[in-house]
Length: 163
Image 1 (cartoon, rainbow, N blue to C red):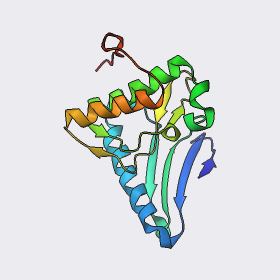
Image 2: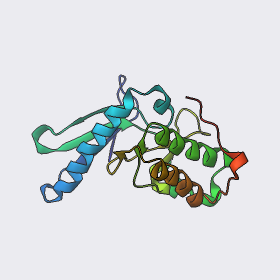
Image 3: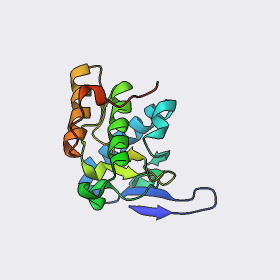
């Protein structure tokens, strides 16, 4: 990872894959960029993922550029997360589920604190993501994030997502 800051792009995070022996990483990054591109046209999703600036494989070096956010939940520690951040993380996964995206790698390291709003979580790393219409799988990923965060929301406590 490389952090770039310019007047035009303050706080851009660049992921590079330079080792030709790890072609699978470059393939995953290319896939991730396709998911970001597909999600970019959906207004609701803009709130729960970082800004996507683009992907390139110039000179054989895979590179993906996204907006830099703050610490990830793994670094913060689940025991130190506020309830609002936990609920926001659940909401992020609910939004993904609403638009038919299976993240396929729900883990604390893939949730970050929003730079613009420290009470908001964003989800990152779409290298293994896929689109799905399987309502059971989409609902299961929401339950997975609740379990990881130590939340046991009752049915009547469900977080409302406005479409």
